Length: 269
Image (cartoon, rainbow, N blue to C red; front, top):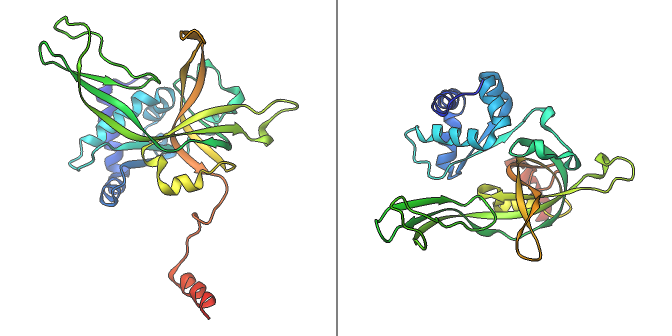
């Protein structure tokens, strides 16, 4: 059963109010601009919402973020992170197909490359110099978009007013050797990390050579020909919603006050 957007927002608001309101407030107090949602809890509370999150994650996550905006809390640009999705949505990188486009999937692999954190534009506002109309353009694709026409009929250049810029980082994930069959070559996929996923701690835990689990939305990016035109073929990439290191590092170890005291005694005696 597909829900309309208004019904989605209302039901997500009830879900967050019942299960995550305290977590929401706690994150706001800490300055964290994200909310981590356990998919299993959502599935138990409302199976219809859970199914739509898997099948149409981008639109459904927007509905969750709209639901969060209904609470009387200073949230700013709050993002949703999802974990614990069902095993049926786990896939090998080599098995990703066109049917998985815009779906929420889980895969594991080893980080082979990682870019530096760079600013990325997610939306831009332009003003029409003729009528003063404000045009909002979402920047989802690899190439920067500008409006081509205003409602007043004007075509051509528009005045850029401002942009929303976030932190972004790219990593290249290679299939784990234990998931490769026979003489098959390991497949790779580019993954885009944004906002809190590029934090200092995340950066240290996501070093090249680390094994990781990624939950994200599979998207396509155009392949450009040498002539400068676009090919009819596309490459995959994953817009990450959640990352989890599969190997423990010292960043994951919790040290109690007593442990710290004993360590200091050993070091300084």
